[in-house]
Length: 483
Image 1 (tube, rainbow, N blue to C red):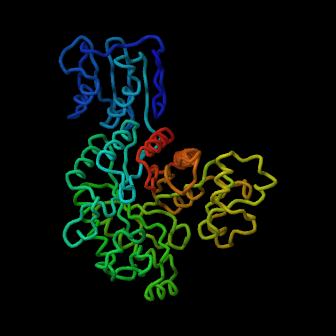
Image 2: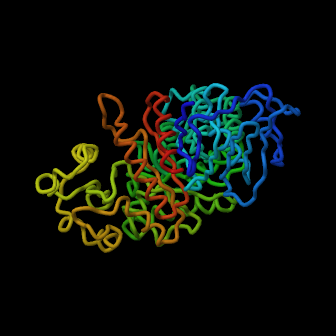
Image 3: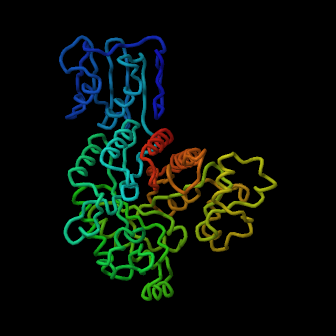
């Protein structure tokens, strides 16, 4: 009997390489979980009945286990699955699917639960035109089989808007029956759906239409709402209301807010930025969005880059806002690379090019050459930057910095924090393929730091219009490193 490679790898596992169990028509499921559909899922997946056959797959309720934890005991005539919640049973069933060698299972025991509470993947339906209904369903099933529990979905103009906003709906938009099937499949498999509706920037799909000319910040990029225009919030709220009404109950809503590069362009915004600062201009708008969201009992999540670039924003940000920290370049801990937003962007100490060069891994060296610029970290970072962030950079500065140092910074400001690596972001290549080594190391470092700092979870992003099959790597890597 070969022992299958289970991904993600269980916390504790003792399995025989010799003694096996044949799961055939002589087995049945006895469901004492107290849950409506769990027994049927086991029976269907293992092709057994729920009658009194000789051998039993017993589902037991054990409230002492972690919410997503399970214990799987495989014996010659009895398989016992213990869990406290539906998620634990589904994770146990996923493990069985990895262990199966045809109808054969190894005798032994698996005790398991995840290290991070939220583990997910972004589905950028707006930009990845190849993500049709069947591709999305395939990714959902893969995510569930690898024990992820969340999907961050950005629909953009591929959501089937109705009424006065129907004009923005793309010809390739998902239909409402297609979207209903996707949402039902995700929830049936235990995945939380987190919609993302951009509240300020990255709204080219909306603002290219002349019907929205009055809420544009400017008329060249046509990518950003004007935060000084009261109608901007109204337009966003109408679009978001349609998404939420269709998606249904949501615990969290991602409101975007990243890369708002046109802040302060229009005359009214320019005057406000000159008076109160860009960070306050940004916060005033985002806070209205957070208030709208929080009033509906939904936690608003915001990308972190503007908060980091303009640290004064943190003093004004709505108390309900949760932070998703994205960094797609850090590949080791400690790291020679620093994403110094507001003080030179992606940088590293120039001595890595000569004095210390032999100490770099190949992945990190390639990342420095592709994305970062050399500086003297102890001399060239601005005083303003160091006054805020120096305490988070670690004791090895300037040769190394603590990987992803802003986890503690945001937490010290009382924020719920999620990590956001990428499996498809910032162009670099590996043997003409997307840069899988960089993405893998980036996902692992984020996961390690999320676990170390007690972050609320991690969602791996995916931005580019590439073959959706590449996202399965992101699923497996995220699952392995966060579990």
